[in-house]
Image (cartoon, rainbow, N blue to C red; front, side, top):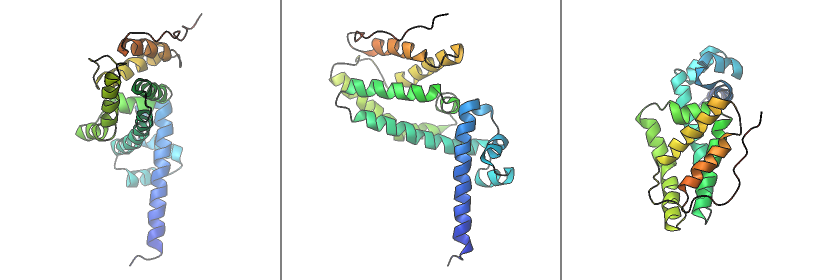
Amino acid sequence: MDSPAEPALRRDAELNRQRLLAAAHEVFRDRGLSATLEDVAKHAGVGIGTAYRRFANRDALIDALFEDMISKVAALAAEAAEDPDAWRGLSASLERVCELQTFDHGLRDIMLGTGRGRRREELVAERIRPTVDAMIERAKEQGTLRPDVEGLDLPMIQLMVAAVTDHTGDPDLWRRYLHLLLDGMRVGGSDGTTLPALPRP
């Protein structure tokens, strides 16, 4: 039987874990994955020893953060899949994920640039890909999505859109190029809406 102290210790350990994850999200959001476990511990207000007790190393922390981010992206995809207009749901989901990436360097690095082996691929395959693939197939059936578009095209689009922000530093310019890419995916091309404007000197 647990002593009264043991549940309290477990609660403290879980609180420290959540504190570290929240701090990691903020630190990696602002600085990308160049930040260290020591940086995260300092931001969380805990000692480095506490950080190492919760996570064996920075990669273990990033893995835990990856799972948290997968849950966030999966929720966006699930919400979009409920739209009866599959094209609208698919394009809205892609736009929202690109928006998250634009303001979150850590999410972009983890989701697009620093996959760590089969486990991360499996998580994406389990949690996100079936929903996105179903939206793609439904949009094709509805006649709004080009029949040769495949699921892999979407993360490639995310990479291209992220490159706009990285190259220009403009936080909103990516919307123009996502719009152009979406027009290329749509049967019949543009929907007639005006492109987001280019910045003027």
